[in-house]
Length: 346
Image (cartoon, rainbow, N blue to C red; front, side, top):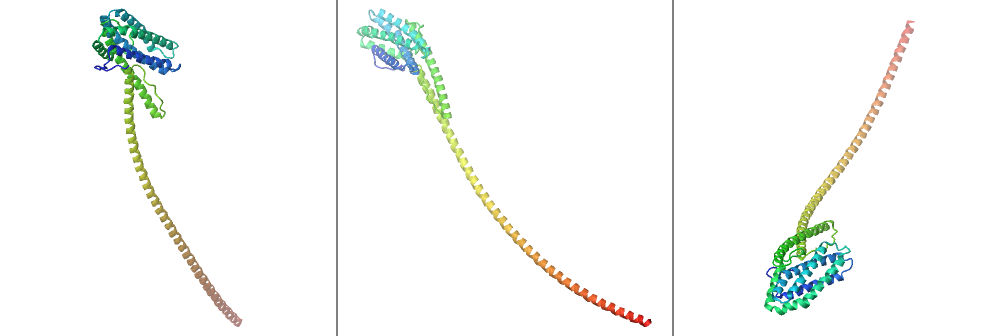
């Protein structure tokens, strides 16, 4: 049964409120008894809830219900004192269970002894103590006492304190201080559990391998704080992820623009290459045509030169032959003349 906030009025009288607490704890007992032998996580969670419920319940009974009964109900003093002693035994069991590993071989045994003790205590209260109080106190008194107990429950300790005073007024004062300390402790534990779970959530999201996280343990304030821390961290991570998505989209836009620019540059390069290839082909064709024309001109010039040389050679041979014949005729004439002169001289 979760504690109500300050100023809350359930409309229940004191005995109905306490019986509701008993029923809620009994449901937790049955869940524990039905849990499997190796359901260590579930058992730890159930025991944490049992510790919180019984710690609050014992506190409001010791601070308000038992003192009121002793003051107003004849013969209730012995019942109240016996109940306080039973609370004392239960608190020691709870304090040991609070720090005990559920794998411990004594864990189950200790819980079962606790369940038997509480059930015996509840049976005595509901069969003997409560009827005497109800028959003595009127409806208005029980309702006023119920409202006061409801308010006290909001600040009651959430952990067992077996060494704390159990008689008024010290138990009320120490209970308020213990409740305040428990509130700070529960909140700190909730922050720690929530932070660890949130960190694992981040790691799972980044690695792409999220793993189920165990539910937070401890009193309701611890569980609520842990859930709030995890929720806040998840919202922050979602905002970061959204920012990253926007940055990724902007990067994609830049990349698309760069690809378009590169494509345009590539098209220009292709056109330039094609123009260069076309110019090179044209130059090659021009060079081939020029070379062909030059070769043709050279062949023609060579043929013309050969013809001219041939003609010149023929003319020179003819002239030489003519000159030789002329020289021969002159020489023959001179020789004949010389011979004739010599003959005449002789």
